[in-house]
Length: 157
Image (tube, rainbow, N blue to C red; front, top):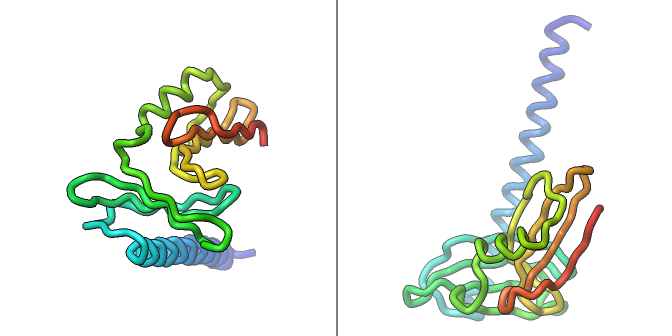
């Protein structure tokens, strides 16, 4: 195979990877916009700060917003027939840093922290900590948003 042909193969792979990335990003953007629209139908708020996806037992888009100067979270279910809408003021629950402190006290075998994000288990808001262990297994530990009590532990996937 000549050099020009190999160069074209690399370009095709890079374009394919870019196309996959950009189509996934547009799906995420579309899902986030739809979640904000659904949140507007259920709640009043001044502005959106962020939207993040959670795909656990029930799938949610978690909308972080400002209302009257206060930060609030809205858990907007992807399928409202399967899961309920949830609202919490940020001040009524644990912060990301508080959850990380709880997680660190558990002394898990952590090689790399992957994410700390909001989600819900059985209609209860949670913080989900995802990490990779030193033996390269994915792990999920969830803490209830309201109390900090451990909600779920899925280890060594």
